[in-house]
Image (cartoon, rainbow, N blue to C red; front, side, top):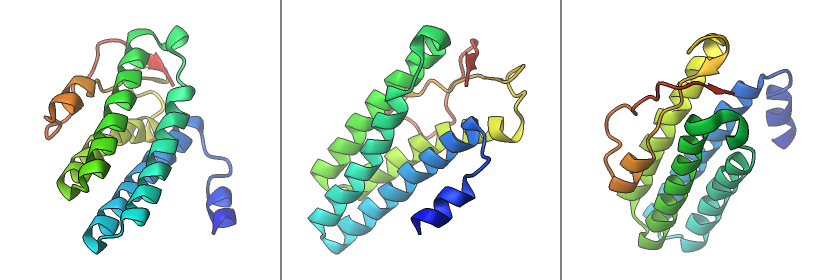
Length: 153
């Protein structure tokens, strides 16, 4: 199965790879929900670990020195969603996992837009959603706010 996924991403752009990582986070969060439903604490922890590993990977590769405030906002989002996923796991809360999925999906959809149209936001730049405060407050039901700045993906 690993080979299939690796070959499926051959030739993918950097933005498409980011979208695939977000899809992975979402997939593992759904696995965590399934584990909660089954009362499988080990399965929940394993799924959460995989989702958090992807977030750590994304956070570690952010270039705040190049991306400025929008990249800082994305960094804040990663920190907030990391904390929310930990809280969802500790509480074994399907609702909290579902909320985290919605938050990740909102940001993933912005990346998907750029994957479809590399000129979205102007000359290959992306207006990064800034959902960190909303994640912390638990109010991510609406579409994320967008910054006026651009961040080179």
